[in-house]
Image (cartoon, rainbow, N blue to C red; front, side, top):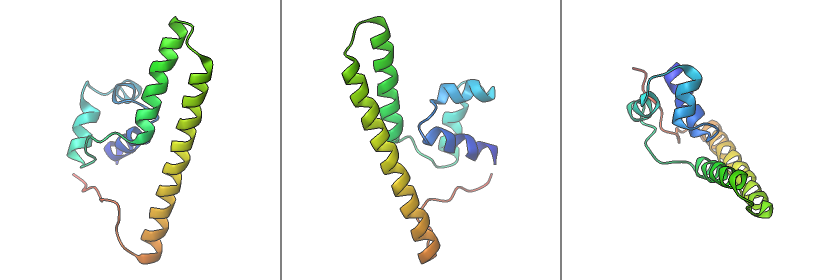
Length: 110
């Protein structure tokens, strides 16, 4: 389902809602509406928060001479968060498969 795909893409943290709306030619607020409609909630993932922080630091550093070591540290922290997220997803996948239980909230198709 396209809506679900877009919501999952947002939850990875690689794109903001606005970026996805532009990428897929969606109306303003459409991704937010789908997130609520499909039960994804409004909690931002740690990956998304870290990427948002890096984007703001990158913008600041391009307009001033901010420390590149601070930016490098944030990039390392982001990579750590990404690895932890991948590990958690893998653990959930294994637990669901091996124990045959639904851990993730399943979205209803509308």
